[in-house]
Length: 278
Ligand SMILES: Nc1ncnc2c1ncn2[C@@H]1O[C@H](COP(=O)(O)OP(=O)(O)OP(=O)(O)O)[C@@H](O)[C@H]1O
Image 1 (tube, rainbow, N blue to C red):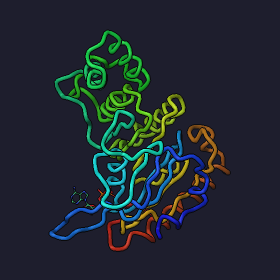
Image 2 (cartoon, helix red, strand yellow; image 1 turned 90 degrees about the vertical axis):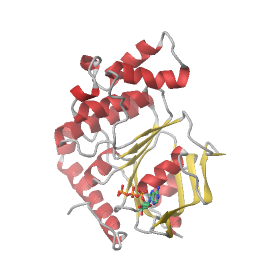
Image 3 (spheres, rainbow, N blue to C red; image 1 turned 180 degrees about the vertical axis):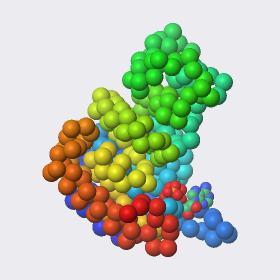
């Protein structure tokens, strides 16, 4: 079974925060039923930064939606702290590729909205919103509307909107796709800093292997059959930015892991599109 074909990464999770047990999700596509996710077993530890990679259509987004509770499995179960997930909850915050900002609200008003949904209008919402806007480095732009902001600023604002509600689990689906490389680098530093500060558990989908190796504790590879073919443990020391990343030994290990993951993705791509580059 695919879930058993794991690297030692799977063995290291002694106490799982999230457990997927034999999870299968089917969709009807072109009048046929397909298994978008097929018999997945996966344990994710508290405070872990897990990155999921795989070819197009391998079920990465579907796996996140199952953990978020937006989708229900046909077979198997998703457990959170040992309890079955029956729907979305404030303990899980999902960040999509698209921005979730309301165009007629400023940064501050958008971030406050997250709190209003959860707690209603309260005096302390503004102060808390400001704290998280500061955390994502946007304090200079609290009064700006989405139309006045760059892609990077909108990502930051979306991140603050979710983070302010303090979800213990962050589900991030290609959150930094389509950002220019400089902004992406800043976002990588920021999300790592926030994760270290807030101690949340992050499950992050990407189509970029550099991003996967830079951010992860472990990397789960999905294949064209919707299965997890392998889980790699990422032993690279942190921090992984700036001077540390320029050390020859670090660079060598970085490339080595990237290659291994790349080979696994390619091996599992089948006929599906594999846009992970050379
Ligand atoms: N709501 C849906 N209805 C029908 N089919 C769906 C639905 N959502 C996903 N699928 C199909 O399920 C499979 C897995 O989709 P999913 O979006 O999870 O893959 P992915 O790995 O995230 O892909 P990508 O990297 O292209 O975003 C694909 O074949 C997709 O077309």
